[in-house]
Image 1 (cartoon, protein in one colour):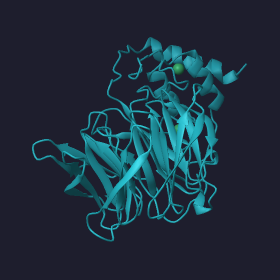
Image 2: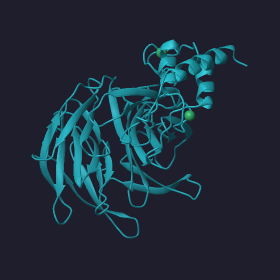
Image 3: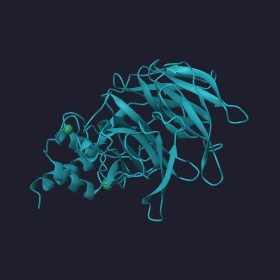
Image 4: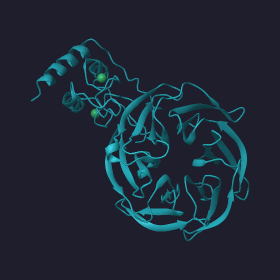
Length: 379
Ligand SMILES: [Ca+2]
Ligand SMILES: [Ca+2]
């Protein structure tokens, strides 16, 4: 069928004979997913993906979500460890949409894109961790779009929440402890209480440092993290007994627009919207502070970021089952000597990194993982 398949199989046999492989795959691997979001407006940027094999360890780029499936991606949210939603900002044209991707191993599949129910100018989106409801911010309309999911996981419009000030929306997050909903504008954050019938009641706005250009938010260990793009910091808030936020401290982070955390909570990743790059921080439990460490992960200007455990530590698994076998060899052979776009290398057989061409260098890595397998950590 393929002449080069036989050549590759021959090489594999030779490599196998001279090697004694042991399972070294580490269970703590995770995946960082970050949207390329230029300041102002973008077009066909993609969503970058990286594997981190150990917390604080080096990162290796995975195939990105290609920009031709998206439209100016800005916000990211995980519905589960193996499903990511991408909010398409659509260059502020008002034609925003939300795209869904299934993650398996280190691979991904496009599920589909939906719109409607007030989706016009998307920024951050988030899921209620209790009900699974999806909230999508819209930059200019004051409308927060709400979606639930039917038995076949199709999104269903679930009404909207109108901001009391009808003003801008950037970030959105739900506090798991009491299901309060937080929606940021540039200069303030609105908070809403959750009612038993599923409605929300506006409580108040809060802010720390005026003129802040607040953007995206996350909640980790019941602490609210809020980016302040103007001052280049991530603000932290705790909560009092009544759920009111109390300013705690800030972490310096130039151009900060979103952040997420390693699964063990020991590392924080902050996206730089102004200069590009992902800044890395180490948690110091004694002082309860975040300390910058390591090099910035170089990228173009970024927006949203999420971290998931759904990733296969075996780079040579090209089919997503985290076993490197004949099926992967067939995928590898299909891409043998193929050259792709160096900025968006979607050739998953390009294992050795740049340049985006599948050559003997990549095959060396493939061969070194031949017949290795690993149980996916989320199973
Ligand atoms: Ca495989
Ligand atoms: Ca290569």
